[in-house]
Image (tube, rainbow, N blue to C red; front, side):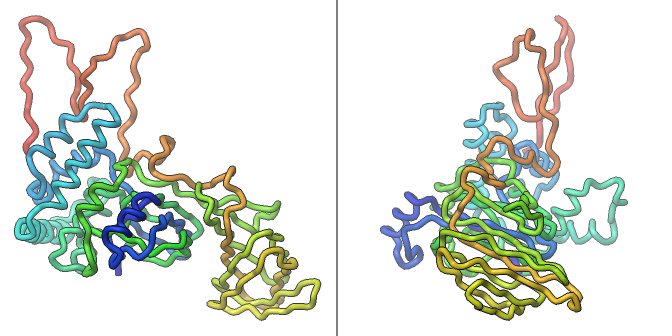
Length: 383
């Protein structure tokens, strides 16, 4: 079952929320997260690009009916300025989240009825329907089944819907919206229980604080398969841009042995799959089984993992500790300008440096060079 649409506050925000509402926000720390997929994993992470949302508003009238005309105009007439885009996105998100329950439930029913029909009777041939449309529709149908009547089921219209392969990872910084939909992951985070929820949950929802705290960055997080560490490609490192933690996934195949890195900080490791044993110079021996977890104190003598060559599969463990590679992160958040461009990103227009640019560049609007006396029909987008 999907986890709620949520975000975690930054340190300053966490302190404020804890002072104002200690019952629902029990500590004053931030909670950045790193997730490494163990199975095929589905998640919604970060806002879509405005160009994508504009297409979805025009394609799905039920979604459009849950948004005010002012917010829709802000999206369609937004300039290319990043601050203007964020203001328009905030207006849209606030309008959608503030939609009366009666309206959103009626529109959700209409949307589900239409999508179910399109997925069965009027199913379009796969070559004629873009993959993102099929993925978006199926995600909404699944979420609506899990959370009947919750308008959060339309979240795939607003958030990037990601499919993560085993071994891939992503990082969610503070104040970024996300929801985990299906699959299994290893999740590592800072020490906090602060969660600001807005949908797909029966728990406490805090829409006002969520609207006010988000960064409204667009494009989603980086997806990274890790990088080999300590000169051994059996040790994959997943390093976020935060000092609290990093994760190593260590694989030892049958008939092999591997020595865990010597650490100057405490660490925890969990056996993910397989079986084996460990030895160190002090004669300490551990029998490894799936689900077992161990604490390694700082400056722990080196441990060597070994797997008998009669075993059919590898021993795989996840090792987590304070970030020792902060200057070499493998992951970054949605605010990084070098992020993924979105599920169906539009090409960035190029211009001749010698050609002056118009100050008013609007999303989805094409500039025309007209001769005097020539008229061109113009269709206003339906709101």
